[in-house]
Structures are given as structure tokens and as C-alpha cells.
Image (cartoon, rainbow, N blue to C red):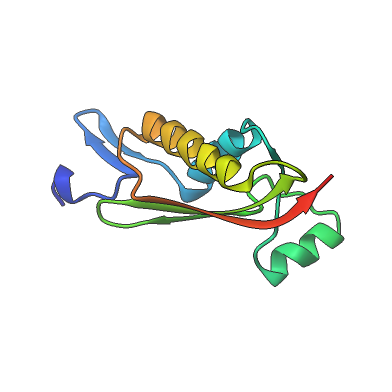
Length: 122
């Protein structure tokens, strides 16, 4: 597979191959979301994540879904916004922060950052 046809999480160098796991990308994303003003938490987006939350199993990647294609990375986020915040502004800031963090870490453009506000919290 040529360098141009590799998924964005893989690089072939003379010294060997570098591959970044989707969970590692999710960690980068979760960190960027956590530093975004107006976000008070991540929301579970699947039943399994909701059950794990009830059972107190912490997952740093809760609310983050990463998909990797041949030449793209797409990210879905499920967030909780602080009550009284401008939701659209918070979501836009989250998109910008996540895009910057992932592109900086991977050196590849992010195709989409989809932000889904699952709730508001005081």
C-alpha cells in the first residue's frame, strides 16, 4: 500500500511503520473537549456506555466515536453543555478545538467533527 493510500492513522517510514489506534485518537479528542469552555461533561451515546456509567466504570473515551477511512478521520461527540451557555457557540468551539488537536497530532486533516449536545447541566 502506498503512503498516499494509507489510512491517516498509519505512516510508513524508513525506520518502520507507525500506527495510531482509534482509542489513542479518542484520547486526544477527549482531552480537547475537556479543555473547551462551556462543556461540563461527555454523554454516553450507547446503551452499553450508559450501563457502564451506572456501574461506575469510568471510560475516558465516553461520548467519543472515531471512524477512520482511507483518507479521512471523522469524529462524533456527545457532550453536555453548561446551562445558560450559548449552545451553538460552545459546539463550534468544540469542533475547532478537536479539529486542531487531532490535525496537529496526526498531521492529517479531519473530515468532520459532529457535535451532538445530549443535555444541559447547572
